[in-house]
Image 1 (cartoon, rainbow, N blue to C red):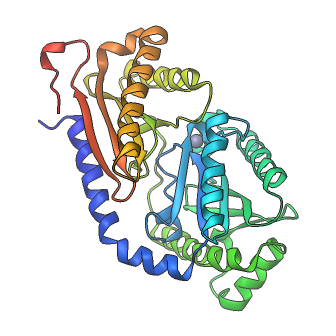
Image 2: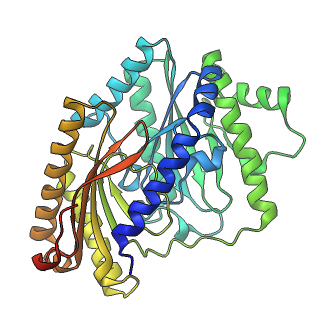
Length: 356
Ligand SMILES: [Zn+2]
């Protein structure tokens, strides 16, 4: 029988094939819309922005963490964002950052578990982060926008410069072209023209997508908390299956706390019999782009993070340890392919472990 690790590797392989198949389309699109776009968001599997904006995967670079909580004071996070911004600007590109929070219009309990379903708290935290970006980068080439992600209709809520919010699921059928541009201009009067032109197709994509979700009467996806994967590290943008993973980015300096929070939630899922207790996986990924030292460093990082996470679980949530399977590797950001470095099915029983 296929194990959870087999499922994850198969999901990654399929995503990677689609990502490679879309390379030409992405290049063409990036030629027309050169702004580098990042999204800071919660690890919740429902927040699939490429689907929601009908954009090719890879156009929006996701940064995910528990609750979508980030702080530009975090040393590793600020270095990552600053390198990203500097690299983009050195290539003559603008940067657009979606600073997001999420909720569901039909029921607060389908909102963000990372904020105990308190949408106001989630939004306030996102506003603080957006203000941080503005304080640091000014109003120039790096533009953060506050964006709610409403998961019942997969709609974006755009918060304008004057605090006004527009729910893209509520945009009337006939509003397109110049009228839509006028509406967006009134939300973002100081946004550089280049960024505006590159934001527009994502907004149009989301309006069409949300309308389609509404007319198709898609059944509500309950956030039932059946997660069985603890994902640690980067390169997980292929892992968007709902109720599957808690993803902890490597950004939070209190990484051990973030890992133990996720581990406690996984243990809760086992105790409540919502998941198969033998199928829990600690999956660690480090991302790289170039063969050579960068790839080698990614391998070292993945092995380190995996051991670090396992040590945190052993110390703080020891009851979870007998249930853990281990999958460690690195992700080639050019192909999104996950390369397995270590695979251990059941840490408690070394007899069934096997190296990949
Ligand atoms: Zn969340």
